[in-house]
Image 1: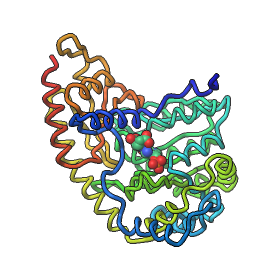
Image 2: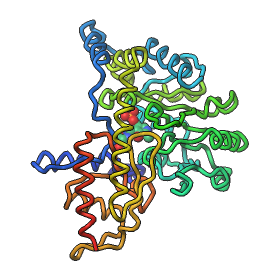
Image 3: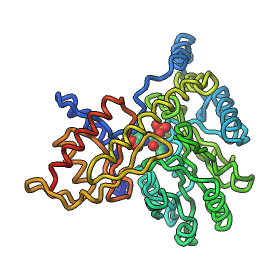
Image 4: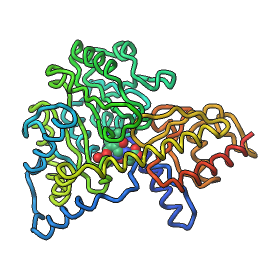
Length: 396
Ligand code: PMP
Ligand code: GLU
């Protein structure tokens, strides 16, 4: 029999939508894939070269579990340069993607009886990583009218003696909004008052638009830094999703425990990918800026396109590569006998009728929305927008 614990979790819905879209494509359907959050750019050339060199040099053996010193040093430099955070090697763990770092944190910190606060809309894996470790996710709602900003009073009201941690994600997947310094300061104050850990997922920090600025909550003072585990990675910033390199920075005791867990699960992240990550973090960063500019162009185009469709309204996201339009006006409408009652119904309808793949808001704990990833070409964006427009016009 399969372990009872596993029944509490579901497969990642974002990855499920992506494989469904790819399956339809393989069958010959012309699918526009707005589903998965994965940069469509190629990994920068100098990063690939570093990996090829690693192979040629025979750097193909086990490394220390938590990553090679050279990569830890590159991460330490990055955290100081970009975030004003000072860490030593003992504060860093390199994992097989940020998702793996987050999973190690969940294993190291959460257990039966613990409550973990997760602002919604949330990234799909947070609640399930809490659940598989027998802890309880506590959802803290945020609202479109507040730009999905966490309201500190609402957060504080959800705290109980069992509250262990809060998972923050800024810029946010799926909303694309960014936490202001003022809100972060208030959240830090609450976390310190109630002795709560903060897990700060900063994977989209390089993808920020307009005049917004990314601030790591850990940089707000020594005390809050001691309660925070910062998570970041190369997937989004350097178009390196397949290389599987992410990392965590935090208090020694927690990092040590996470490293112990990793030593009994995956061991080190791939040696070759670690060398590539050193090149990505220490080499020229103009490739990152180039991709960011292209994402910004796509964002502007997509959001204008969505807002020109009847029944859809979309706020301008400030970061990441997602638009999170409100589709509540479409709910209740019908085409022949098919009534669209939920974001899931709409996603299925758009996939089947318009061959556009996207993720329903319900997967992120937010009914009445859909998530559109604009990590795809302008051509696909244009095609997808027109298909959605046409499909929604059919609904009466
Ligand atoms: N956090 C967020 C918010 C994400 O969107 C992703 C994307 N997969 C991850 C973490 C994990 O990224 P990866 O494991 O590829 O580093
Ligand atoms: N983070 C991306 C997304 O939300 C990748 C898929 C995943 O890891 O869930 O689509």
